[in-house]
Length: 194
Image (cartoon, rainbow, N blue to C red):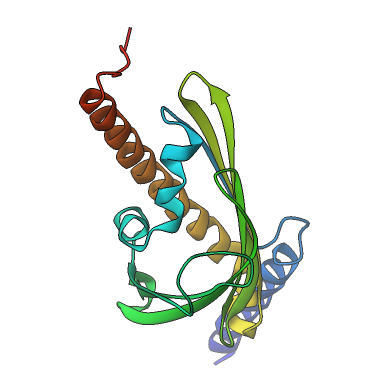
């Protein structure tokens, strides 16, 4: 009987240590921050529609199935609801509300994002013109998890979210560059790869 109590005590101690480690990691300096950057063979004007057109957004942001907007056009104060099919939750539909807090086409936009009872944060998209038909896109998000279990699991959630964003950015880069090449060929301005 003593060995059963010792094993149970060992499992309880491991569980307490795991929770303590997750709790400590959840309070590190960059907790809840995701950052991704990529250089694209396209101008800021060619990239911008991919950040602001519903049909284009759904092509590169995995899980995104619908975007509802409270008013036509986009400007500071515009609200959008993004409906995503969360593959980490068995395909459950999740809604996130975003409000544009900064809108400076084709260089920068920021959106305050909330998911009721789960998280809130700010995501900023910055495009820097590198010249010669090239630009750098930086996506920087900072999130706070309000649901206690999500807050505890932040050290696992944030890296997974960043990995998804890296894959989405790679998809965006491919789509933007393909479109830029096609438009360049139509206009007779295709760039040489050499």
